[in-house]
Image 1 (tube, rainbow, N blue to C red):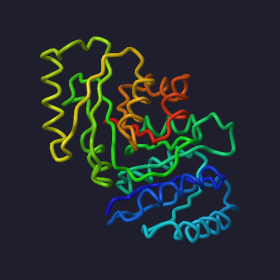
Image 2: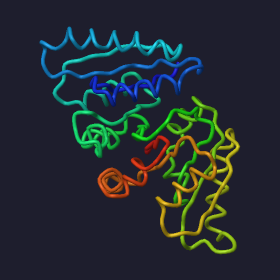
Image 3: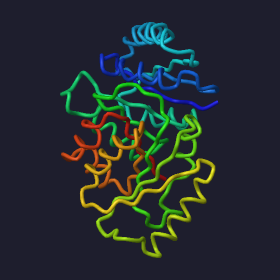
Image 4: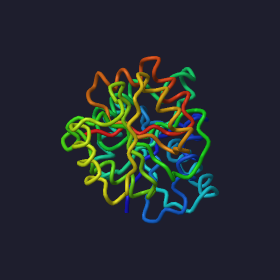
Length: 261
C-alpha cells in the first residue's frame, strides 16, 4: 500500500488541497492517505484530533480512499513532517497554499523549501488555479545531462505507478536544431530504457524560455501534472522564490511535483 501525506493547518486553502488530493486518488487501490497536522502547544492536542476527525468525515464524501490521521506536538514543522514521511515510507506529499499568509506564497514557503531539500519523498505543489482532473498525462522535464545519475527513477516510478499515466519526457534547449546531437540521443536512449514500463514519448523543444514553453506544452498536450527534478538547493530556491514561480506554479493549472535523489 502506497502512502500519500496531506499536511493540513485547517485553513480554507489547505482543506481545498485535501479535497483535491482525495478526488485525485479516488478509485486508486492500495493507497493510504494520511492527514498530517503539527501543533505547537500541548493544549491544542484535543482540538487537533477533533478537527482531523471532522475533516476525515467530510473527505469521505469525495472518495473511497483509505484515510488515516496523524497529529503531533512539534515546533519544527519541516522536521516533523520529514521524519514522519520517512517513517511511513511515503510515496508522495501533496501541499497547497496556506490561508495564513499572502495568497502569492506557497504553503509555508520556507518550510516547503526545507521539505523539498530534506527530500523524504516527492512533493506535489497544487497551484491555486488548479481544477481537479484525473492524472492521465504527465510531463517529466529533464536537462538530459547524465540522466542515469541525475534522474531519481525510484521516487518518480512510485508516483507514476499511482496514476499509470501517459508519460511525456520534455527537454527545452535553445541549442536544438534540425536533429539531436549524439549526446542527446544517447541520453534519450537511457531515459527510454529507464522508463520503458511507461512507454514514454519524447519532446525536444528549441526555445529559450523554459517556463513559458512548459506552460504552453501543458496546454497543447493536456498535461495533468508536471514533474521537475531540482539539481541543487539553489535551483529549488529559484524555483520557489523567483518570479518564475508564478509561471511554473501560480499560473499553472496543474500540479507541479519536485523529485530528486
